[in-house]
Length: 259
Image (cartoon, rainbow, N blue to C red; front, side, top):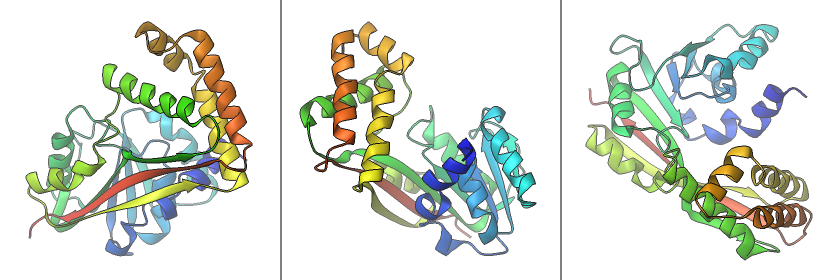
């Protein structure tokens, strides 16, 4: 399976955009702001009139463009742009999705204001962010593996990459930006089957050897090389354990531009 084919399964619209689906229809013009590889945008295509995916790096969605051509999907396009300065006229879209975007944005309110601007009156915005405060883990080496996440969270903050405890603030963010009829919810994504645990654990084992994670954690004095090797082996052991379980909390919010 191609990497984009894998993304369609692991980062699907059915899982990651299910909270938006009740608010869109076959006449909806949808903007996926911060679309990344474009798997969610592609997955939403059958449910709406059109999807426009936006991200800073156009190389991210090249595989998606190839997939769309091969499948003759004509109602999805991708645009390289900054979500804080969208190249679209006012009131262009009926819905805006921002998944895994606001926790990584330098200026989250600017993105929300732009979503308001490009939405038609009465249009819907839907945002989702991970919330590390709701993380659940079971299985072997728990303290060692929890430290992996504690260090990653510190590094994200030190290197200004992401704020993984900002999901709880989504309702406030939309409210302060003038959206109405706001509804905030939370959902857990769980890894509790042998296949899911193995895939998740092996992925984190690779992450513990990622060049950025290794160099940054050592530079900040948070890990030594022997500790990182032990962490990798612990994730590999966890990946094969019948006791292993992991779950992330995702906070989601839906709001309306006032009419």
